[in-house]
Image (cartoon, rainbow, N blue to C red):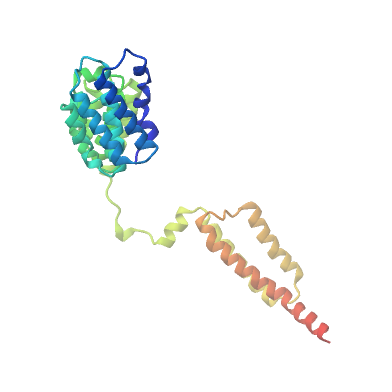
Length: 308
C-alpha cells in the first residue's frame, strides 16, 4: 500500500550509527531486529514477520536506558517499518493506536511518522482519525522548531482540514500563530486560495437532475468534434444517395473520395477518441456500400465474360 523504498529511508540513515561508538548488547540486538524487519518486508514480502520483528525491537528498546541518543533513531526506524507492514497487511486502522503505545504522548511523535500517518489515513479515506493527533502535535511549541513541522502543517491543511470542510480552522492554521513558522508569505496566499476555492465549491447548489442533459447531448457537448461528425455523416449519406442513382458518374465518385480524404487529412480522426468509434464504423459501412455500388456490376460482367 505504501512505498517500501521511501519507508526504509530512516533505516538506511542508520548507517552513520554503525560508525558511532560501539553499541551496547541491547542496542545491538535492536539493530539486528531492525535489519531483520527490513529484510522480511522488502525481500521476502513477509509483512507479518516484519511487523513482529519491529514489535520485538521496540519492546527491547523500551528496557534500554534512554541516555544513548541513538535510541530515538532506532525507535523511529522501527515504527516506520511497522507502519509499512501494517499498511501492507490492511491493518491501517490500528496504526495510530500502535504508534501511541510507544510514544505515549501525541506531541512526541516524530515529524516523519506524523507525515506518514496523515498520508496513510488519507489514502484509505479516514483522515478524520488524524485530526486530533495532528492538531495537538502542531500546537506543541517544541515541534515548531523541527525541520518537518512545515510539511506536517501542509499535509494537515490539504489532506485533513480542507477535504473535511473545516475552513475556519484552516484559515486559523494559515494566518494564526500556530502556522506562523509553517508557511512563507507566498505559501500563505496559495493556501488561502485553495481554501477559498474549496469553500466556493461547497456553496454551489447541487445540479438539478430534471435539467440534466441526455447522455447523447452531453457526449456531443463534451466533444468539439460531435457537431462536425454529424454534419460530415449527413454529407456522406447525401453523397452516397447521389452516387446510387447516378450510374457511371465517375466525377461524383472522385468528389466522394476527395471528401473522405480531406476529412482524414484535416480533421485527423483519433482512433483512441471515444467519439471516433461510431464515425469510423459508419464510414466503413458507407465505403463498403460505395464499393459494391461502383464495382459490383463490373465484377459480375467480368465473371460472365469469363464464363463464356
